[in-house]
Amino acid sequence: MEARPTYLSLTLLLLCGCSLLTGCSGLFFYPDQAVYLTPDRLNLTYEDVYLDTADGETLHGWWLPSNNGTTKGTVYYLHGNAQNISSHILNVAWLPERGYNVFMIDYRGFGSSTGVPDLEGALHDAETGLRWLAANPDASGSPIMLLGQSLGGALGAALAGKWTETQARPALDAVVLDAAFSGFRTIAQEKLDSFWLTWALQVPLSWTIPDDHEALDLIAAVAPTPLLIIHSTRDAIVPFHHGTTLFTKAQQPKQFLQTDTPHAATFVYPEYREEVIEFLEAE
Image (cartoon, rainbow, N blue to C red; front, top):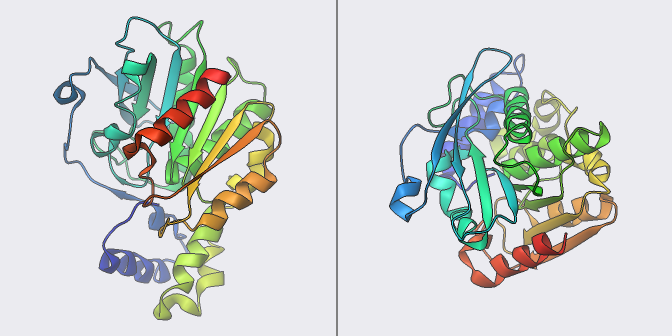
């Protein structure tokens, strides 16, 4: 989950307490429609992509082709729970010059995507994007990797586990989860526990969140796809134990990269970029 102002988090927690019948999945989403940065301002070639979902929404994404004369593979990027792809693009803008295509989408209700965000919808949207990518001739014939950060890491773990378990094609060649939380219920309960007004209700409120897609339950199914879990010991939003718990539950082949950054700030640091490139190029 992305860092947001404390008063906003507390407001959502209180709203959550007033919504027992409809669940607390709104706790995970802080979308907006502002345009913060576009790929052309970073000297990146790009295409706008619009995808229709089975339930009538339209998702917006960006296709960023490799720009160094070679294509080593395609990275499917799932962003965190705040703002939209235009605020998260710097996390992947360095990949095209390293020989990787990038495909990134906004979940429903984020950026230019239609609809209202919710947990089931975001999971469906993540799968919709991967199915489009799997059918895209520009990505065929080269490795497809999934990179999820924060909320996108939790969504990515669920998606990759089910994709691999059902033997969907093409198979994923690598999965990278950065600052992911181990479960939607678990992180919700931790956040509810941190505020005195919702402390007493942490268990009943967190149980209104569906538990069919918990990363902790699905991470083992990612194998035999190579998995890299990244987590910072200084993560104040998603505590470090979420990363170690996921790593313990995951099956080989797997690697763990311990970092020392603020939440989901991994790719600000060149040394961590290199660690990820080494992982991708070894697969």
